[in-house]
Length: 411
Image (tube, rainbow, N blue to C red; front, side):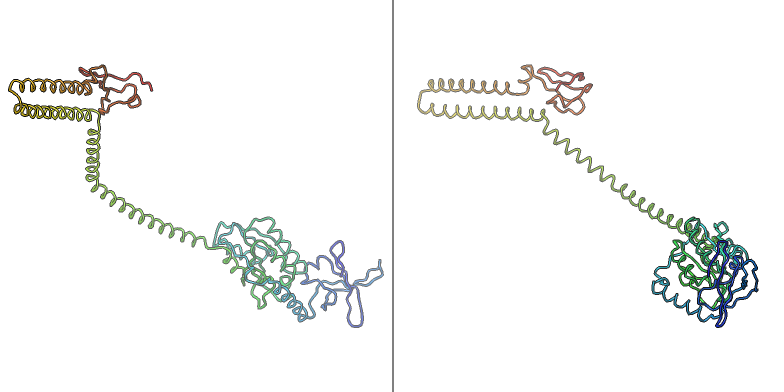
């Protein structure tokens, strides 16, 4: 069978005894169920036409019918086995349908009840759902190529998220386009999931087997590819109410937890304050014990106690010496010895007293030294880093005290 430049077909028709040239106009070729192939048996209907310019007689065909459906089904079964061996029908390769597509692509005839039923079902369930229509031939010799091209175009344009391939049913011969390998391959190659809705028929087509979802009617397909918007709104409202309840419950729990924590803090606050006050009192006592003034006072008291101890020791020694002398010498020698010993002890005691006075804080201060304290904390300043400009200080001198403000600090 040869196809001419204008889409006409020429071929030879023969039976067991004779042969005649056949001719199929392009317009008739688009209407017939399938194009004849070499070796197949068909029933041709048409008219005999004589072409005087060529001196030939041709049989102009306007209708082609299968003569042997059994052979055609056998070829279809062989194709099914081959595709099944490739895993074309496996559930694992089926693409999932989107829950809520952006738009739905409809591949069907632009006229008739199918397109109307699909659009009505889709928009009844989801009024503002986008629908993109790709007109295709669903019957005739040109139908397989028309469907395959529309599938590829739909994937290239990427205007929808799911494809519905639909037809209003028909006989085995009328649905033959959906049993062709070219349509099956186009569905397998599609990036977008394909839902078939080829009408009530006892036979499942190849398109049904390789498609991602199969529906028996266009109405069922419309319900399959898009959810009810009213149901989604109801679910969203219910989830919103449930979320509000959960938020309210969580806020109540958190409020109770914070209230309990606050109550506990209120109960613990006095004890905490008392503990902090005790710690501050201990720290103040420790600072007082370690302050220079307290240490100087303790040193003074230690020196005075040592002086008293020395006096007691000297007096005891003098007493022992006097008693010893009184037993061995006359009274005048004893008095003289006692007097001398007492004078020596008195001088030693005076010398020690003078040394104690010279080493005492007052003695140090009397020689021109001073003790500087921070006016607020009372801390003794040992280095210039212990104060700052404009800080008030107290200065203890050998005689009297001074109050001053720091106007310069040098390291």
